[in-house]
Amino acid sequence: MTGFLLRRLLSSLITIWFIATATFFVMHAVPGDPLSNEKAVNPEIRRHLEARYGLDQPVLTQYGIFLRNMATGDFGISFTQQNRRVNDIIREHFPVSALLGVVALVIATLGALLFGALSAQFRDRWPDRTIMLSVIFAISVPSFVLAALAQWGILSLNKAAGFTVLPVAGWGSWRHLIVPAVVLGLGTMAYMTRLMRSSMLEVAQADYLRTARAKGLGSLRIFVFHHMRNALLPVVTVLGPAIAAVTTGGFVVELIFSIPGLGRYFVQAVQQLDYTVIMGTTVFYGAFLVLMVMLVDILYGLIDPRIRVGK
Image (tube, rainbow, N blue to C red; front, side, top):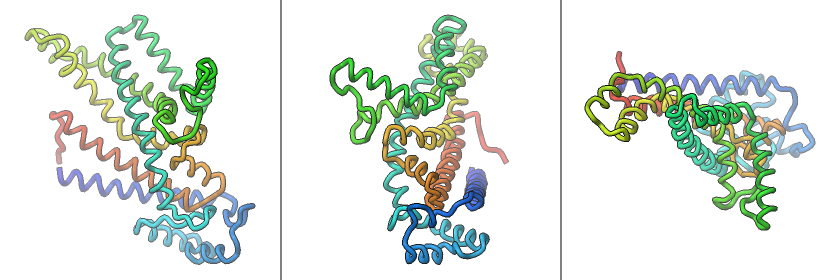
């Protein structure tokens, strides 16, 4: 197990390095200069930034400075937000995105388990067809369209009720969290529902289920401890990417619902060509994704005792 963890850690570091390298050279290939736009900084600050990040040096020199700073956990200072470090932006706003993502993932996972199990139990009947039609809709429609439809629904609900049942946008209370979390989790819920349904149908033909029935075990015990437990394994496999997908997928949702999360600042940084914020948040989210995938690999072995890491 120790050898497996060390190999996974090494491959994770290589992956993060590749993400950082690709992001750096892609950003420098984009035309434009964040220090020469309509919000340009004064000459003194410009000289300081150029000296700190080697902006007046060859690209490879800048790349070396970037890797050195990244290795020490320093993503630099924002080009467009004066006296604000990228590390501070991540520390202050990622918890908001994380909270939104965790709630969205909980909704997606519980919904997928419920609807996937129902769809499998009522295969080829009207509950199955209704759930699968809803799944196709949730997968096909982009999150920004779902967000707009949700805001229209909230406005209609508030108008019909005569008072504010749910806020249309903003941040500050649990009521601001409900609708954005549902919108953000719908796509993941739809994908995981299809996966859960397929897994449930596959496990239903397993020999150990027939053995459990032959031994006289109760239907509920068979369903929970034998059927659903083994059907969960493929769902657990995608939890790592799903966590990162829900978190990073909140960029547009955060912007539409005016949520002060990290995704909102990332979108603004792209619009303003704020190199340090873009590269810092991209590397941070990349490392977060790699960490989640590695943790899921470990969790997978703990859930299924049949799985052991071989040489």
